[in-house]
Image (cartoon, rainbow, N blue to C red; front, side):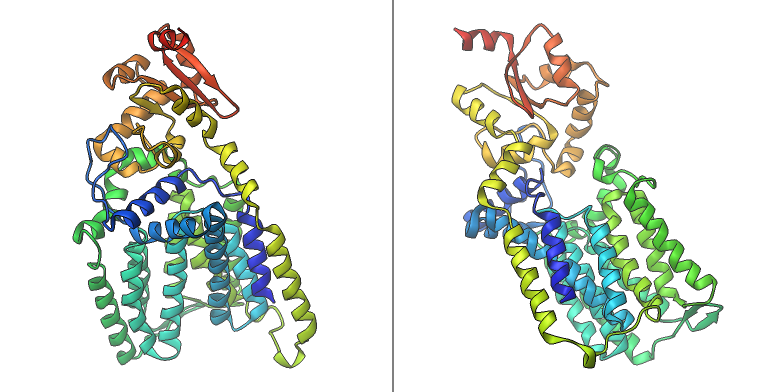
Length: 476
């Protein structure tokens, strides 16, 4: 019953989150893979990158996204999001239950995963990756507390993970933390560590080595394995200018919740109400560092911290007793929850309205109807939708920030969009014919001041500017 309530919560959370800007280019990539039966290894959607080589780190997840669309259109995509979001919090509930042995306390742990996961619930491959992280923690816990044969599922998991998302490297680090802690046995107050038996450790090490070998089961080999390191070490414009990579604001609700989780955990240790194991301490440090450094990593903190806190609080709330279970009230609750899910699932019309509110749907119709001559300079957040809805117009930039970082376009565009460079320079360099911008962008207020540019279209979320000469011909 509690698991179904978590599914209700997941659906209510994501029902208005359909139109993520990056969803569209993931969808287009999935379509290309499905129709050509080949994985693209270079950019074909933008004219500014000069066919920059790309790393297909998410091709398998993109294929699932397009398959959902092909099966059910927008409703299929929303079902994809509801399924993976619900699976994530329910799997987290199972993980917290295994750690704590208390179904009620574990529900609170699942709520923490939901709270921190709200930063990441969208139709993007990362949702699958975070589900795989929970699966990894489940397999490691089962392998070290029950049968070590559970460890041998890890190579298969990593073979999937590297083809779904670049966060597979986090999974390797997490496994490495467990391996490191398995060598130590000590008790220092409420901080403890229990050495694994040699046979169990050897099996885990073998499974980890096989997992590393499984990473090579990808389209481009070692380059795909090294991609996460390149992102963290060689992409300053991506990390410095994209909002989801910004540091966490500790005064916002999720920042405060992070501090409260850490405070609760360490107070339980300080007052000797619960132990904290070495591997748990290292996982908390890793999750906190990632979340504080980049707001998009909050969900990782939730996944790592929730089972630890659930175990520490396991004796604080009466456990579940199957003998006291009341079947029919639970059945009624489950039936009511499923009805809520059915009623809350957005209609096709509602999904279309969400797209029209967030994406330049009508602006694209205007561009196509008036045959505006390119090249086009587009808003960063519009690029993904344009790749999907207007493939005949190559984009200037979109959410694939890695290829634009490598080609230098991301820095150029950021300087232009934030008025740190001469507005004319970029427009002249690329011979821009028209600009499709957000009404809220700074350049949407600057271009009207430039004598050679004229606004020819605007709506609630977008505005189109063309060169004055072109606009005059259109008027005639």
